Image (cartoon, rainbow over all chains, first blue to last red; front, side, top):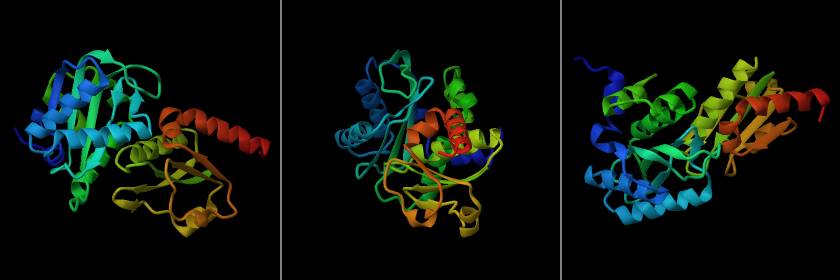
Length: 157
Length: 105
């Protein structure tokens, strides 16, 4: 199968190992911790505790639940080695401050290097953010069945 | 209407760009011409031109932080909102702005 350029591109910031479609988390903190662990296992960050602190600090500054079950916690931190995404979908919706007051089941965690000389990676995250402005994309997060389908969704132009 | 604007959020990673897309999408659907400059973690992109600002009927600043280059909008009608409002209810935002402008508020 031939890969499109777009798919190659987005794989610089996300891959199947950074996705968990059956996150067992029951709380917001658990969900964030589990995704941070995925980032750690994949050598995207070098300190889970430090990065967690940054993400939680950002949470204090404003709501990251976009609505329709999708949240985008993020952290820009010294402990990030490689700017990337980790995505989880919880088995049951969890409590999370959101713009429509609904609980969250899809969590897209953005990990950004403090000084990223690689603008390309940030541009890729930006493209993902732009997709999140599309209601159709948001709706599909709940229905994708495989990690590959999720990556395809994020590769959409 | 011709509308120009800025979007900028605290970390400049996600909300800035979601707000921009929503403002453009809902604005275009409502029949406006919308141009949004982003001020994010990698700096300013899609910078507004002097001409665009001059021709604009309205300026929307969707920001959670202090934006740079505010003086460019001197003498213009400026509406300031948090990025979350642009993300949550862009259509309602335009409706409100349209009715306010009609009433000359």
